[in-house]
Each structure stands twice: as structure tokens, then as C-alpha cells.
Amino acid sequence: MTTHLRTLTAGLLLACGALAVTVGVVRHDDSDPAAAATALKGPYVALGDSYTAGPKIPEQNNEPAGCDRSDRNYPSLVAAELGLTGGDFKDVSCSGATLADLTARQSTDHGTNPAQLTALSQDTRLVTVGIGGNDIGFASMIRKCVGMGVLYDLTSAFAPEDAPCARKYGDGIQEKTEAAGRKLAKTLDEIRRRAPDARVYVVGYPAILPSDSAECGREMSLAPGDVTFVRKQEQRLNSTLRQRAEAAGMNYVDTYTPSEGRDACSAKDTRWIEPLVPSSPAAPVHPNERGERGMSTAVLHALRTSP
Image (cartoon, rainbow, N blue to C red; front, side):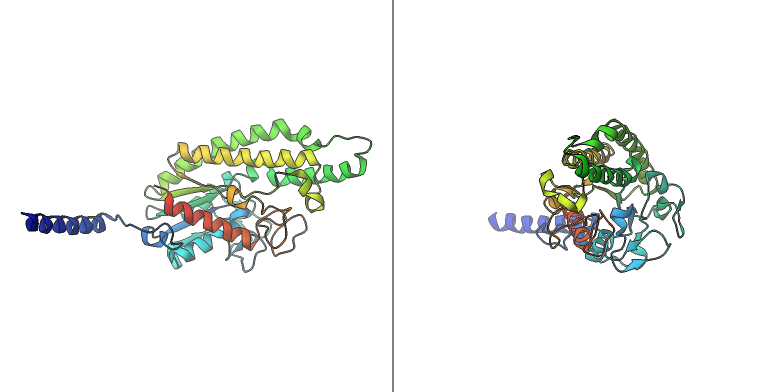
């Protein structure tokens, strides 16, 4: 009887293993950085704005001109880790993109980017989307906050208002963030319609500023209270991206947590985000190559650990 049971058990295990292969269930070791490649094949489509594209990080892809897309951005690194090449990988991210540019042609200073969602198809199996910052005017707000910070440095002895940018933009940016969340919800529905079998990952933004305003000095020229204000607005945007992704039954990639302490005001040999005057090839207040690599690690971790 014992011998018979052992034979029967072995047969069942072999049958289960064959069934797992048949239906596409693949086990992998989460400790292996390349393990996602055994569980996920392309086609992979990357959507997004400049934090995805990687402006000024070499080598730049000038098709179309004006999108400032790097071949070392996080989508390219993820694709390489997954072994995806040729038609199995399409990066259509473009600097300056808003949510509206996912469904309509985007004009740049040097060319036109087709609507990003046109890259999706019924065959698409993986989608990453990193977008939303331009919808709330985050970059332009930071530039204006910097101007106010310079004025603060000159006049703080006479007018000690240490958060002039927060006072000016506080209410408006919250409304814009809520509106961006509603647009994202509709966009995710459209992604699901065009690529019904794809696993979709909404990628958040890495930390731009430190938790301690005293650490930001000349790198960003913000008034102390505005360092806290801008940081909170980014956290609010990321929270909105997470909520909308989860509500749509999709995955969220947290790049903020692993990037804390690697913000634009940190040491140049550890930072993921370049300050106003970059010391590495990257656009001001954007990820450098180290940052894009860190973001790719966060995406790959999500691929290995998400349902």
C-alpha cells in the first residue's frame, strides 16, 4: 500500500507540474532580479512623461524629435532585464506629456508624438504608465517657487514669510490633483479596453525634495516652508495615482520610498534627481541615470511580487 501511494503521489505531482506549464503558471524566485523574465513576456509598451522618457540622459532617441527619450530610461532597462527586443518593446513616452497626450497627438518644439495609446493592441501583455505631473503643473510651479525662494532669501529679514509659494498655490494645486485623478481613471479604462490581457503598472514619482527643509540649501533655492509644501504636493499626487490604479484593479509602483534620501538636495554621487544646476547628464529637477536605474528596480520588484 505504501509503495502504491508513493507511486500515485509522484504521478499526481508530475501531472500538476505539466498542468502548470500548460496553463502558463510559472514559479520563480523573488530574490532573483531577472526572475520576472520567466513569468512575463512582451509585447511591452511604456507610456509616460519626461520622468519616464529621461531627457538629456545619453543616448537620446530623436524619433520623434522633441520627446527627449533616453535608451537608459527605466522602460529600456526593464525591457532589457526581461529580454524584450524589437517589436516586443515600444517606448512611446514623451517629455511634456499630459494625460490628454495619451489619446491625442502631442506637439513638441521639434516634432509630433503620436497619441501614446495607439501603441497598444490586443497582443500587449505589459504596460507601464508614469504620468500626471504635467497635469497639475508641477514643473512650472517649482520654477515659480524657486523665484519666490530667491526673493525670500533677499527679504526674509524684513518679511519672514517662509512659505510664499504654499500661500499662492495651495488651494489650486489640490483641485488640479483631484482633476488629474479623474482623468487617470478614464485613461486606465481605455488602456484596459485596448489591451485587455495586459498587466498594467502605474509608476509613481521619486522623491524630489528632502523631509528636512534645512538640507535643501542652494541646490533648489526654495523658502524653507515651501520645501515642505512641494514635498507634500508630490506625496498627494503619488497617493492619487495609487488610489486610481488600485480602484481600476491595476498595480502601483512606489518609486518614492526607495528614493528618499536620494533627492535633488542630496550628495551628487547618491542622488536620483538632479537639482536646478545638474552635475550629471539629466534635465534640471529630473531623474539622472542612477534615478532611472532605481526606478527600473522598483518596477521589476513590482512585476515579481504583484498578483
